[in-house]
Image (cartoon, rainbow, N blue to C red; front, side, top):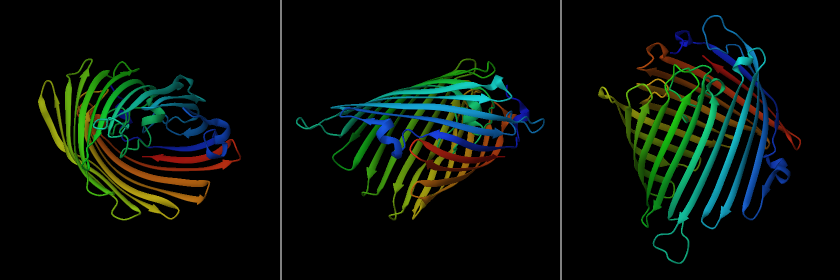
Length: 382
């Protein structure tokens, strides 16, 4: 399985984006962003240069390298009387100067269909009911996407939460269905389902298939405040491990107590079980974030605690994370963002991989003329 030397890794990265052809930016929108009566097409090309002084995430015998990342993404939106059809494609090519064996290609394509249907009004099309469908495929090298700042408070990583996984590729295909209904009273209902296939390049990691069903009820107390109840159930079938189930029941609260403040909270409990041992973990499960708009930027603070089945390894994985973030507009076209995250993770399947991690990330960007944006950044991970 995973190399125990990765535990307690200390690594830092300095990221310098030498050139981004910002063909989707406002300055070049008339040339590279096409908008028609029924069609919307945008595309973007980027180039990034990264120096990593510990590419294998080991405490001893560190090796460094320069990494060039070239990316292209495009989005096509077709509008029709009932909604819109969206096609998105992106690829990233990582080129290691001294370790060509780590070169990889990550790509993500999403195909989504949104329909708006009217129930109760035979004349006019109403947004009261919405049916959605999406399918997304990705081929991702874990190295540059999940070993640094994993944005833990907002986006859990592909693998066991809180674990450092190193340079391993993964293929993911997810199909999602959703239905939303707005009642005449300030009450809305949401139903959703998803099916995911996850396969790894590393034969020591376990492929999986998982299905999720969930729903939520939301009651709008005012224009700026709402409460709700949410439930989700995920069943995971591993190729060589016992199957597992995870259920999460949560209370939802969203509020804007003052014009420049926002509060989003999800607080509940997670019930995790495996086929061979039954329910073996009942823990709090929550995601709380407070944000404030400032005259020339924003600031936010968040806390996340999540327990789930550890994809790739089996068993139960847990992560807690605290995040502080802020942004600042130096000029109307130049802005910077700073974030700091502390996370702590554990896994039943990989006792030697329990980790705590502290990351600081800084990014800034300035447009140079019509087609070029110069962006720089720094990432520290301990």
